[in-house]
Image 1 (tube, protein in one colour):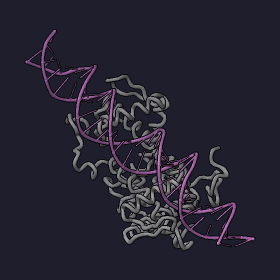
Image 2 (tube, protein in one colour; image 1 turned 90 degrees about the horizontal axis):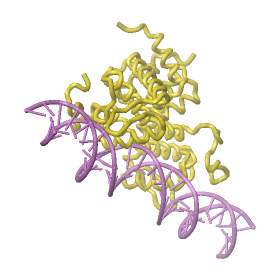
Image 3 (cartoon, rainbow over the protein chains, first blue to last red; image 1 turned 120 degrees about the vertical axis):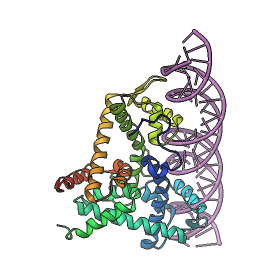
Length: 151
Length: 151
DNA sequence: CGTCAAAGTTTGCCTAGGCTACAAATCCTC
DNA sequence: GAGGATTTGTAGCCTAGGCAAACTTTGACG
């Protein structure tokens, strides 16, 4: 299978569809954005607004880092924010945030159904939620459904 | 202890307990190393040696990128390599590689047992294998065991 | 041997995402 | 409404991990 044909045995063009490592790198590019958007939505829902200071505390980074990230999200059209004011999601941003949140919830419920402790599940869910194909998420949902409400 | 009574650093439960986002960032730092080591071990097992060109093809990056990464792994004491020669794992490197490989196998088997198609499972496994706590891996193994070993 | 393609390395550039230090704006409280 | 604390933003630095281009080494083979 591998390493028989000399040269590149993985084609460059569509390797993004085929090569798992390339896929992981692509996922990483979106991961941070999704985390920010999900968190912003969450803060707005729970406290009425999303502020730099709270985002920084939740993510465990400095405020300067958040400011920079928000600038990028603005550039990408995912949030709006006026200087010294709080942050809002655009429609596009809301779409991504909601999807991310749903994935997060699915993964968390799944891990708990699997028998993982709540605290651990929270942590692991954060790590893996950005790396799951629709097929795997569907399988997780099937599993949750089958489970008889905890035990 | 550079981070202390600085500004609002963390909110509720942690002081030193793990923030999921911080944890994910830490995982990312090791992720690449683990991928390299696992792959190097695999190449040695299957072809007798690990060469830059093959690593690059597998990872979907340029050889220059691999050379740079190998330099880092050398610095960290995880591989040995002489210029223009192939790459070997140190004992420390072997330990990490084997662990990574085992995690990979567990995740892959688990996803397949869950009902995810082989091809998709391969891709997703690569994405999530670096983000799983021992507890979750154990839960996955339990699940695999319980399965009627299909076929 | 000599040559030359393949493999490996070096160099220099780019972007992302951290950080600190400092400056500026906001807002609270009196 | 002024002053000081808090919050936000700016500037500059750092590291990692990509890339392309140019150079060097290796080794296959006529």
